[in-house]
Length: 71
Figure (cartoon, rainbow, N blue to C red):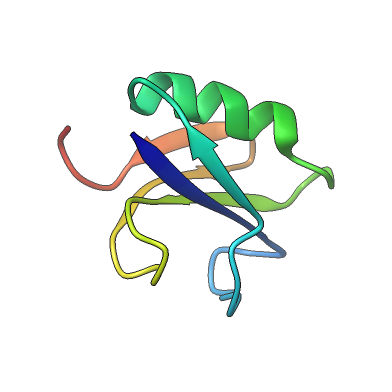
């Protein structure tokens, strides 16, 4: 399954492009991969299920992941 990752400065920030496309078997593996790809310390990671960034499925803020919908 493909997951689309963005890394933003804070929770309210939005990017017009995707930083990484992550191929993972499930959401847990996608979160692990996204955490390894995090470039800056203290930023927010967002995982989307589509490249249009319309369906946010998980977000990492202050080192803790939060699922936005049940998977």
